[in-house]
Image (cartoon, rainbow, N blue to C red):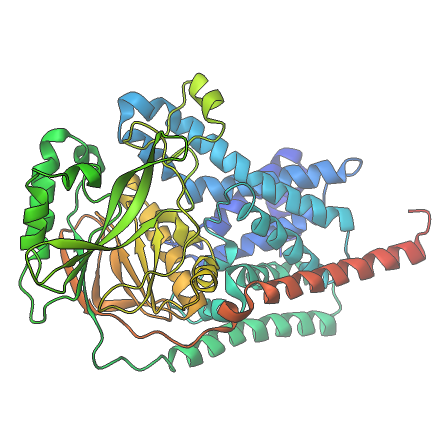
Amino acid sequence: MAEHYLGLESHALGRAVLALGAGLAAALAHPPFGILPGLLGFALLLRLGDQAAPGRPLASAFFRGWLAGLGYFALSVWWVTEAFLVDAAAHGWMAPFALVLLAGGLALFWGAGLWLYRLIRPQGPARVLVFAGALALAEFIRGHIFTGFPWNLPGEAWRAGGAPSQAAALVGAYGLTWITLALAASPAALPGLPRRQAMAVGGLAVAVLAGLYGGGAWRLATAPTPRKAAPMVRIVQADVDQKEKWRPENLDLIFEDYIRLSRQPAPRRPDVVIWPEGALPAVIDDLLAPGQPYPIALAEAFAPGQVLMLGANRVGLGEDGALDYFNTLVAFRRLETPGLEVAGIYDKHRLVPFGEYLPLGEIMTGLGLRSLVNMPADFTAGPPPQPLALPGLPPVQPLICYEALFPRFTGQGAARGGIRAEWILNISNDAWFGATSGPWQHLNLASYRAIEEGLPMVRSTPTGVSGVIDARGRLQAGAWMSQGRRGVIDAPLPPPDGPTLFSRLGNLPFAIMLLVSAATAGAFWLRQRRYRPEA
């Protein structure tokens, strides 16, 4: 590593530029870029933490960590501005504020992580473990505080379905984040070490990297055997632009298009047909009301025994007598006699702040802010998730939209329901994000849930990326559809794997990693107290 990074290290402005660049480089490791050497930005961030300004080292470390986070999250979540431009007249003015506040707010966690690292002031090559623990802890808090927003965890920079990503089956996304941070930061520990020690540190890093690739390759080669009588799944991607969707005159056209695609001939009749989140621009209760033509058309589109699972908006009566609105997955089953029965309902539990509801609603409304839902009021959260048991299908765990970002959702649902799901269904309306990097990143993050739980996933979006993902997190060949395409995906449901270590232990392996970091930090602290008692 160059001693002064072209002279930038010696100037406050230069160090700020380096911090911002470190975060940008790390963000480039994520899809759709996939530039894995960008992870070396964490090595630069560790070095910047080591060289915090004399006289105010903690404040300096916090600011550099915040700047790195600002670059990382600005590049990771810039697509959020697209959602505010769908109805530019009503929400467009909020787009730049949303990006600045979101990226700047998330960056506070990185600032806190580097502040904690500098507070400990570790020395020697083992300090990479302290750095990994401090930043991974900050990322864990980011994924849980308030409603949590674990978008683009560093450990999820590896392409889902690739060899390194398979470690998530053992330690989860947070454990893989700790490993990734320690591995990526290790080059910063090499300068100044004796040759033998430097070779030992470098060799250990290479061994860990080889273990990620070798162990992952072995797991990929031992995937579960496909079932002979696997259910046939059809995913309908109608490519409906979000800007056109909620125009009242388009309801019938959109409905007819979904029906037409659902009835498209196939060599084998699908057992289940899936429409994405919020497929139709109407409340499902209104569509199915007596006298409406839609229930008859739906029933005629499917054969007896077929199941239709679609994302919809639903109305319910709250305990206070007011109407509650839900972002819902509804499963219909075609009866032997003409008609449909409701076979299952899942109401989204983890809602998107500002997108589906306003935190501190009255205060935010007074400031002129509005949520993005096309409903008279904000959505209401449903009960905690648990698997749905549907006629003729294996138990399924629904995840609506960004619920697929959260590790343990499926495992916790199994504990509540008393049965383990055999597949995950993620319906999402990624049309909000247009042709940006957002849908590709969402696909990658969702696929990690398949790896962690050892379960296949079916992913349905209105504009892409939709597809069938196996229990190793791999998109199945010929069973996915990119952005901006219209059609159907017909594929057999991949088999589930047995419970993974992560599904059994949860974040216990990650907690052990944090304990290793804490023990290392404690050893440094004791050493400092022994040799510098005045400190």
